[in-house]
Structures are given as structure tokens and as C-alpha cells.
Amino acid sequence: MIYTDLMIIGGGPAGLSAAKTVSDYGVKSILVEKDRKLGGQLVKQTHRFFGSKKEKAGMRGFTIAQNIENEIRKSGSSEIWTDSTVLGLYEDGVVTVLRNGRMEKIKPKKIIAATGAFERYLAFENNDLPGVFGAGAVQTLMNVFGVLPGKKVLMVGSGNIGLIVSYQLIQAGAKVVQLVEAAPEIGGYLVHASKIARLGVPILTSATLKGVYGNGKVEKAVIHRVDERFNPIDGTEEEIEVDTVCLAVGLTPLNELVRMAGCAMVYSGELGGYVPLRDDFMQTSVNGLYCCGDASGIEEATAAMLSGSIAALHACYSIFPDIQDYQEQMQRLQSALTELRAGPFGEKIRKGLSRAVVIKNA
Amino acid sequence: MGEISVRIENHPVLEYKRGKKITFFFNGMPVECFEGETIAAALYAANILDLSSSRRLHRPRGLFCAIGNCSSCLMEVDGVVNVKTCVTPARHGMHVCVQEGKGDLL
Image (cartoon, rainbow over all chains, first blue to last red; front, side, top):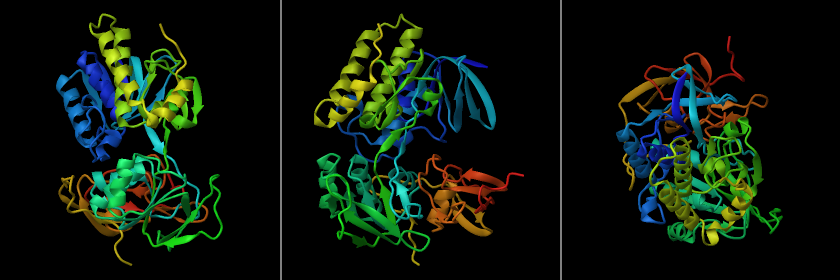
């Protein structure tokens, strides 16, 4: 059995920030990541972040991940286990991890689950044909391995991911033949939409994918218009010659682990699905178990990093209540997060959180 | 049939640090790739898009999530079935095969 103060599950933006916060206070932790490298979705993000300088705006995702990782490694208080998968959380507080073909048992004082999200799928004819990808897969192939999945792409979804990945596809040398959005309006920031529109990507709203066709792989797609209730409108089918379809139709929190530990969950369409009930410090209904980042509700990387730091700071404080600047730091993080969620784009998130944040701690 | 997927050579933001050239085998056929690439990425770069097939209707399955969450890319690697090829690095001399159905464990 390995004993540690804190265990952080997931080395994406939320988990990395949590580990960084923990190492700032010299608290011992183990960061477990199932991939071979840290960074989660940040490693694929080639665009510069928006927002305040303090929250890494102006930097590209992969640089942010690398910088935080370097800081964690330098401090030496956090052990980093990559290529390691958490298998289960047990009632007696033991966590089992598969590492190098062995099952390790760890007993941490507190657990932070930053397990991320997975991509939503869409129902359409032949949606299993090779050439249909999730947007994350396209990013992994292009931005991590330098492999362009196709040359003529249909993008489905105009949220920020759909818009940004369209831009990344163009940067990598593909042609985004068409972008369709089922809603009557573009979902993401107009600055991203304008950027790809200027590069010649036609953006069609109130339209979606009917099906893809081809011999063993995508050779063409058929799109059609939908009404305000998302029902297809007859006679509006249009055939497009593409070799790749990229689905950017949203994400769902990946939080089976905390659910397994018995956390009270609530369904929130605004936050992407079932999310754990939590207090202002991301602590779930199971004492000592925190959930942060996309696993606690779909937002974007900056929010994930802040919620990871908040969870870690609170966890450290509850183990070592003599932390000097706790109040000051917590206030800074909380107000940064509130500021990020202000404004019209944060409305959906605020609505979701109004139901997910219910536990009031002293 | 033209090439669908290709390796990106010039990128305005990214610089790809590719490892040394290695060769593995796909259904007995040699495939060249770079050390550090996953099996699935290497196969896609070689325009091999069919990684497995559906159990009942035997429809082709390609790469979908690329992060080890879905089961679209399970293949037989050096005799071990159900390997997630999208997160497993390619190694020199390795044998990768399309597996039949669920894959035989014994």
C-alpha cells in the first residue's frame, strides 16, 4: 500500500492545475494519467487562449500544458504516473491503479477526480463508416501525430470546437468543404466563425447530416435542412463530395469513477449530462472526494484549470489548516471563475451550476 | 483510389518531432512509420482505414475517438487480441492483424 496526501486522477487541464497548486504548498501527491503523456486535450490545442493574462490567455494549449508540467516536475512534491489507469475507488478509501502491468494500491487522504469528458455521437445513416471521426480524434491525428485524416472535410457542429478544429484543419492543409449546424444560430464565438468564413468555409445553420455513403469509407455526405424542432425538411437534401466527416456535437462528462464511489449525481443538460453535486470547493457528497474540470460539467479549459486549482487548494487546506494565504488565494480563484462565467456565453453554465452546486459547507 | 490521409509536412504553428523510422507488419504487409506514433495513426498515415469489423454485419470500422475510449480500433497485436491500437505505440517488427469478431483469448 502506498500512502500519500492527495491523489489526482487525470492529467488534463484540471488535473495538471490541481497538481501544480498542491506542489506550490509542498503537499505530497500522486498524479495518475492513463495516456503516455500529460496535458489531456491541451496537447492538441494549437490556438491561443482568450481571456485574462493571469489565466494563461495568449498562450497556446500545448505550451500551457508543458509549462505547468515543468513546474510540477521542478517542485518534486508530486509523483507523476503516466500510462497508468485507475481501476476503482473503494469504500475504505483505497484506490487501485494499473501501472506497468501491475495493480498498485494507494491510500490518499483526499482524492481529486479530473477525468474529463468524452465526445457525443450523432445518429445518421452509415455513421460507422471509416472516415467519420470525433473532433478530438481529428485533433489528435493532426496536432499530435502530424497525420491529416482527410482532404475534404464536412464539419458538423458550430460550437467553439467545431469552429476551431475547422481552422486547424485548414492550417494543416485540408479543405473544409462545408460546416453544418442544426441550431438556427452559430454556437461558438463569432470571432472564430468569422475567421473560418473569411477562409471560405460555408457555414450553414438549421442544417444537419442525413447520412454518409461510400464503399468501405466515406466518399460523400448528404446534408439537409431542419426546422426549428430539428425535424428534417423534405426536398432539401444536398450531396457533398467529402472524404471525412468530423463530428463536433458536444461532450459528456466522464465521471463513472466518482459515481462508483457513491456521489450524489444530478442531470444537467447545460453541463452536458450527469454531474456530481458539489460544494463551492468542488467537493462531492462523498467526504474527501473532489471532482473538477469537464468531469464536473462541460466548460472550457480555462474554467477546468481554475476548478482544478480550487479543488486542490481546498483539499490541501483541509489536510493542513495552517496554510497562510488560503483565504486570499481561494478568493482570487473563485472570483476569476465567476468572472469567466459572467456575460451571455456563461448563461448556460450558470443555469446548470444553479442546480449542481447545492451542498453548503461551513 | 487516391490517398486520403497523409503526413503533414509543413504546419504554420506546429513542428513535428518524428522519431526514427521503423517497420511493423499489418496482416503480414510491411508498414513504415516513425517511432512514437500509435499503431492506428501509423496505419492511417499509410492509408489503411479499416481497422476492424462489426460483429454481426461485418461492417468496416475505422478510427473514431483516438484516445482509447471507444472500441472501434481493437486489433490483434503480436498475438494479443483487443488491443486499443489508437493508444498503443507502434514498435519495430510488431505484427498487427485485423481480428475476427471478439477475438479468441485461448
